[in-house]
Length: 272
Ligand SMILES: NC(=O)c1ccc[n+]([C@@H]2O[C@H](COP(=O)([O-])OP(=O)(O)OC[C@H]3O[C@@H](n4cnc5c(N)ncnc54)[C@H](OP(=O)(O)O)[C@@H]3O)[C@@H](O)[C@H]2O)c1
Image (spheres, rainbow, N blue to C red):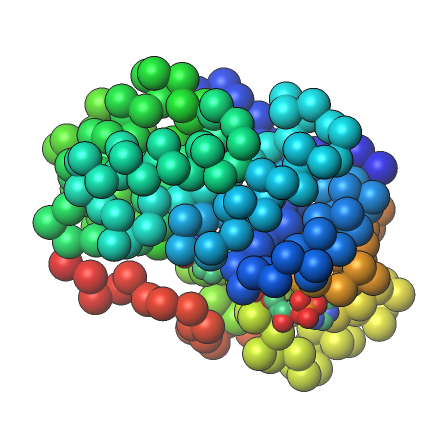
C-alpha cells in the first residue's frame, strides 16, 4: 500500500501517516512497534528529545535494512533545551542518537516564552547547514505564528498540534493552510480517552471500519498529517489502513457537531 505525501513549503514531501512515539521508551516494545510499522507501510516516525527514545529509533532504522532516504524522521527540541546555544548543541546529540547526519523535520516542541525566538534562529541555521531538511513548530497558536512574522526568515513548514474529532480547531487549520503551513494532527485518537461517542461509532459501523479509523480518516479528509501512536501490531496496521474508504458530506457534517474542545495533552492557549 502506498501512503500519500503532502508537499511542504520548502518543496520536501511528508508522508501523511507517521507513527507517534511518545511514551514508547522500553526497548523491546519499541522494536516490536517499529517492525510492525515498517511491515504495515509506515516510513514516517515522530520522535522528540523529550520522548527519550531517539537512540531506539536510531538503532531500529539502522537495523531495518532500509536506506536513510526511504525514511522520514522527525525530532523536536525539548522545552528545557530552548535557547540559541542549547538548541544547537542538543540537536547535535539528537543526530548522534538517531545515527544520521540529518532529520527530515525538526520542530520546536512548544512556544516557550522568551526563548522561542532565539531557538528558531538556531533551527534556521541548522536547516541552512543541512542538519534538517524542513523546520517547523509545535503547539503554536495563531498568535505565536503571527509573532514569527517579526523575526523568522523562514516560515515554518509545519505546525504540529493536538487535533482530533473532539478538538477540531477549524480557525487554526484555516490559518495554517492559507499560509502553506502543513498541519500535523497529534493525539489524533484523542489519546484513546473518548472511544464511546455514538456518532463516530455509527459512522464506523456504516463503513464497516473501526472507531479509530474514522477518527484518523476525518483528519485525512482535512488534508492533515496524522501521527497515531500504538505499540500494538494489529492497531498499528489498522491505523494506516485508512486509504481505501472516504467519509461523505453527511459524515463530515455529523462529525463537525462533535467538537468538545477536549484537550488530552498540554495547552498552549494561555502561553504569552
Ligand atoms: N508535539 C506535541 O506536543 C505532542 C503531544 C502529544 C503527542 N504528540 C505526538 O502524537 C503522537 C500520538 O499522540 P498520543 O500518543 O498522545 O495519542 P493517540 O495516538 O491519539 O492515542 C494513543 C493511544 O490510543 C491507543 N490506540 C492506538 N490505536 C488504537 C486503535 N486503533 N484502537 C484503539 N486504541 C488505539 C494506544 O494504545 P496502544 O499503544 O496500547 O495500542 C494509546 O493508548 C505521539 O505519540 C507523539 O508522537 C505530540
